[in-house]
Length: 148
Image 1: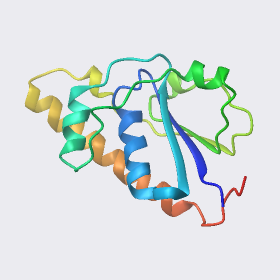
Image 2: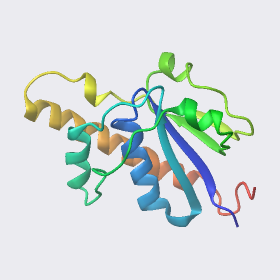
Image 3: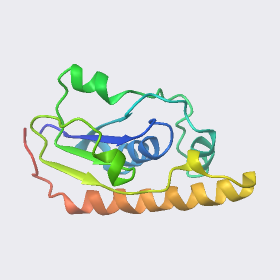
């Protein structure tokens, strides 16, 4: 059976979509082929890198991607999951053949202010919310889903 193709999208592909991609790869194994991108490629968020390392997942070498490049290449996905607010999610291109487009609205770690510890605490909360959403997503998909 071919893996289920999933694309996670956010604004800069710097934190939320990177964490979601890493968790689905980690927990979903070879059932899924996972990528992430942003409306524009940004710079990997060091807070996201740090809080994922706390989970034993290293995303420090990940590159950031622009969704327009994936769209132009004609990539196809079974699921496109936006992890930003609905307004930005609506700016994402519509990929042909998508089984479902899902929006999970998580706080953007790059928008946080305050002390480093405050920003880390909030980024950990976002990380944990993303992890829970990924685990629910995996449970929601039957083993024989989308054989294409």
